[in-house]
Image (cartoon, rainbow, N blue to C red; front, side, top):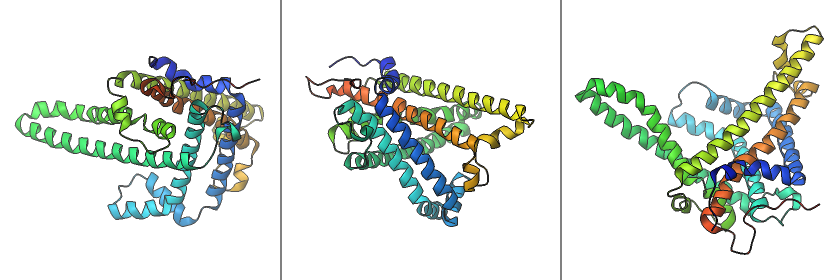
Length: 309
């Protein structure tokens, strides 16, 4: 079993995109198709589902009954989003674990993706339960301390949110290899990740943090560049900088607003960034699973190979 190196794991997604251009182009096209589908959904979405999504994103606190009703209304859109995430993650895993199976740029929708969807839902529920439990315990402990020692209680209250974030980060990292394990072993695997990540928390956290920082930096730079180019175009045409956003993004939810040159160009750029995002975010977990589990068996490559030709 080779040594797990956080930096190499964090940068593996960029390496995959560079060494497998045909697959990466397919991922771009898939994300572009998803963007077109999203436009169609936004334009023709029934009022009930739109209201449900607006309610989820709104500032108001929902009762349990309201939340359940909203989730039922928004379920088709949420399931579609989960399917897209599973398809793209599976494409990255397939490239790494089953490099020869390169049909359709490694993109499919089948048993592997459905198992990834199930694993994602289970891990998400565990994360939610962990955060809720931590919040309750911290609230009770801090409340008791505040009664007995008000000054100390005030200090602990400030630390509370950081402790909750710590619980989330710890649980997330310990479960982070579950998707890769599920794909590699062709079965829903959740708690095997807990044992595999034992003693590797900080290395994995560093790998994920570096990967996120890299893709976030690229996304910010490209986005600002797009808005800068759009700003120059607007000024040359005698417009105001306040018009830049409307040049690149659709407004009003009408089909016509999505068909502007600026919106189409910005959508293509976002499709490229999205394809890179999935590669960068999914790859570290797969590489970590390979190194810590020793998969695939000896005699098979432990990292994805570049495309031939």
